[in-house]
Length: 174
Image (cartoon, rainbow, N blue to C red; front, side, top):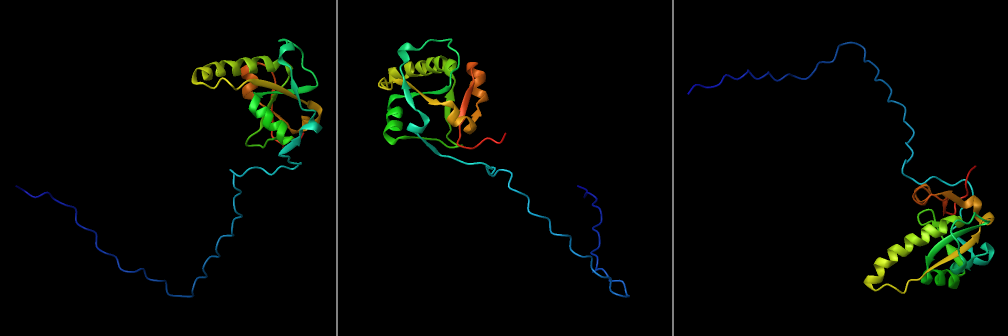
């Protein structure tokens, strides 16, 4: 069998020679660039930042759902639908806790009925699993006290067709 022809190997080169003559000054090192800001760091809030609000100052009150009617107009309150045990915890603590990572979801009066209906659908499935003791309750807070701490919740607003808000505790910069 005949051997395959291979290309000749290049010869090793010796070290480069420096030009004879005056030494050429080395170029100065490039200017140090300022460090790039961390793009994933949370932005610093310019205004105040709250993590809790006092129930009495907010005018927090439980709403009787028996007198609730669908199709009512918005009023001066915002509403939150939760379970009885969570409401009892809020009342015992005397404060509502929230943060940008765990905001409190609030809606206007017309948004309570669809939110409550959705919660009841989920709870029907849990009743089969034995979690029937979780009764939904609605509480309200005075809107004008927290209006500047609210952000719009576009996902729930689009889903229910009514304005929903997130209480994050960060002051809006208008």
